[in-house]
Length: 93
Image (tube, rainbow, N blue to C red; front, side, top):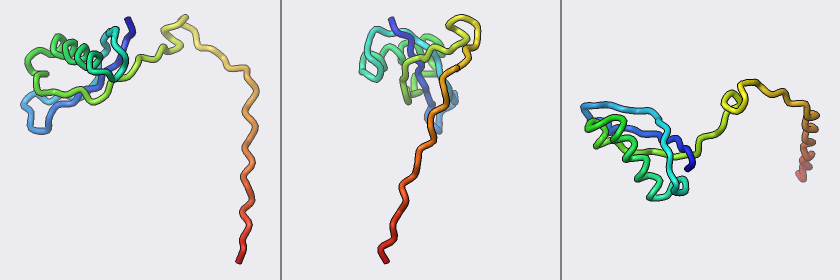
Protein backbone atom coordinates (compact mmCIF):
# COMPACT_ATOMS: atom_id res chain seq x y z
CA UNK A 1 0.00 0.00 0.00
CA UNK A 2 1.13 3.51 -0.83
CA UNK A 3 0.86 6.39 1.66
CA UNK A 4 -0.87 9.54 0.39
CA UNK A 5 -1.53 13.01 1.77
CA UNK A 6 -5.02 14.44 1.28
CA UNK A 7 -5.88 18.14 1.58
CA UNK A 8 -9.42 18.95 2.69
CA UNK A 9 -11.53 22.09 3.00
CA UNK A 10 -14.92 22.87 4.48
CA UNK A 11 -17.59 25.01 2.81
CA UNK A 12 -17.50 28.72 3.72
CA UNK A 13 -20.88 28.58 5.49
CA UNK A 14 -20.20 25.41 7.48
CA UNK A 15 -20.64 25.30 11.27
CA UNK A 16 -17.60 23.08 11.72
CA UNK A 17 -14.87 24.86 9.78
CA UNK A 18 -12.00 22.72 8.65
CA UNK A 19 -8.90 23.18 6.53
CA UNK A 20 -5.85 20.98 6.58
CA UNK A 21 -4.33 17.68 5.55
CA UNK A 22 -4.05 14.09 6.73
CA UNK A 23 -2.29 10.89 5.72
CA UNK A 24 -3.97 7.71 4.55
CA UNK A 25 -3.06 4.48 2.78
CA UNK A 26 -4.59 3.23 -0.45
CA UNK A 27 -3.95 0.65 -3.17
CA UNK A 28 -5.48 2.85 -5.88
CA UNK A 29 -3.56 5.30 -8.08
CA UNK A 30 -3.24 8.92 -6.90
CA UNK A 31 -6.18 11.06 -8.02
CA UNK A 32 -8.40 8.15 -9.08
CA UNK A 33 -11.98 7.79 -7.87
CA UNK A 34 -11.05 4.85 -5.67
CA UNK A 35 -8.18 6.82 -4.13
CA UNK A 36 -10.39 9.81 -3.35
CA UNK A 37 -13.01 7.44 -1.94
CA UNK A 38 -10.40 5.95 0.41
CA UNK A 39 -9.38 9.48 1.43
CA UNK A 40 -12.98 10.42 2.15
CA UNK A 41 -13.53 7.32 4.29
CA UNK A 42 -10.38 8.07 6.29
CA UNK A 43 -11.46 11.71 6.72
CA UNK A 44 -14.86 10.63 8.05
CA UNK A 45 -13.15 8.13 10.34
CA UNK A 46 -10.82 10.83 11.73
CA UNK A 47 -13.19 13.79 12.05
CA UNK A 48 -16.61 12.15 12.39
CA UNK A 49 -19.91 13.72 11.41
CA UNK A 50 -18.43 17.24 11.19
CA UNK A 51 -16.57 16.20 8.04
CA UNK A 52 -19.65 15.13 6.05
CA UNK A 53 -19.86 18.45 4.16
CA UNK A 54 -16.09 18.82 3.73
CA UNK A 55 -14.48 18.12 0.37
CA UNK A 56 -11.15 16.64 -0.67
CA UNK A 57 -9.23 19.34 -2.57
CA UNK A 58 -6.07 17.49 -3.57
CA UNK A 59 -4.44 14.07 -3.11
CA UNK A 60 -0.70 13.57 -3.56
CA UNK A 61 1.87 10.88 -2.82
CA UNK A 62 3.74 11.29 0.44
CA UNK A 63 7.38 12.09 -0.19
CA UNK A 64 9.98 10.34 1.91
CA UNK A 65 11.92 12.97 3.80
CA UNK A 66 15.57 12.52 4.68
CA UNK A 67 14.79 12.46 8.41
CA UNK A 68 12.54 9.43 7.96
CA UNK A 69 15.04 7.51 5.86
CA UNK A 70 17.98 7.19 8.24
CA UNK A 71 17.78 10.02 10.79
CA UNK A 72 20.77 11.86 9.30
CA UNK A 73 20.91 14.74 6.88
CA UNK A 74 22.78 13.96 3.69
CA UNK A 75 25.44 16.19 2.14
CA UNK A 76 25.40 16.89 -1.57
CA UNK A 77 28.89 16.58 -3.06
CA UNK A 78 27.87 17.03 -6.69
CA UNK A 79 29.55 19.87 -8.56
CA UNK A 80 27.37 22.95 -9.04
CA UNK A 81 25.41 23.21 -12.26
CA UNK A 82 26.98 25.49 -14.86
CA UNK A 83 25.30 28.84 -15.23
CA UNK A 84 23.11 29.09 -18.31
CA UNK A 85 24.13 31.56 -20.94
CA UNK A 86 21.42 33.84 -22.17
CA UNK A 87 20.95 34.46 -25.86
CA UNK A 88 21.75 37.94 -27.09
CA UNK A 89 18.75 39.62 -28.64
CA UNK A 90 19.35 41.39 -31.92
CA UNK A 91 17.44 44.52 -32.67
CA UNK A 92 16.33 44.92 -36.24
CA UNK A 93 15.21 48.55 -36.09
